[in-house]
Length: 348
Image (cartoon, rainbow, N blue to C red; front, side, top):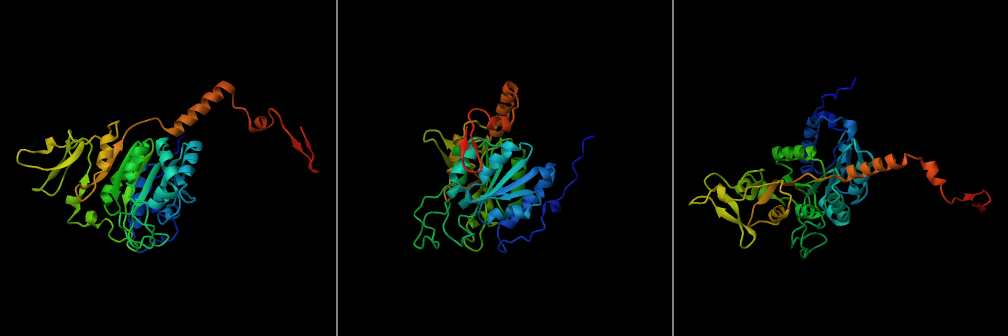
């Protein structure tokens, strides 16, 4: 008789470890959202694994009452690839930060995405190195004054969703730590996706980069600064009576902002298609930055494609069918072998 999955609650995913982030850190809100959504998935806890690298966000596995692995700096995607390939029955989530994933871990991130490994990647972006006390990160804006850039950063920052789209991720999304309803819905959609799912979560570091996203999170700005993507609906934003939309200027091949009214309606705006195979429009939207454009929130891309782990498993099955299962001992003793005696002598 198959055993029924027990009904779980948020509390079932809270570990007995004391949560140690700075008071007011956005990580608390993200942890709460993840722990709230996990029970809805109907997946036994023993099939869930959270893997992290190094950074404030990477303490996440300690606080989840699931299997977990706190790995080394930037290498969480590589560990996750190995685990998912060897244990396809597990649901593997990667928790990382803008420094961990886009600096030392950049190479590992792009390859887990291009391979379409069936893992879920949550990148907490606070635009700063918080764990090491306030140096600028790969997502810090030009001119950012920090301990490592006292007269202002001269680096052009990465846009995380643009990196993910460029690497070929089959699902790319963006949400905000304190937008709990939106974040939870994004996490639900991530959980159901088969393939590499990448979510940038804009997150406040109230100690070293407080207010980095206040232009978006302040209540009076949310309708003006946020573009909430909905599949099959036009790109429209702004408060009632002052709505604006995004239209494609086909001649210039760029998006433009238009005010609705005076003959211009939602039907004149771009209708968002997250399932479009060609990621070019999603990439164009990811490159639309303030102050000219609002920040796109939601799913930018979600397409189906063969996964890396399924492909590896299929290859193994094909080889086993053709050649048999064999054994490790037979492999080690096949061909030329040598025996090393206690006195150090070697015989073939």
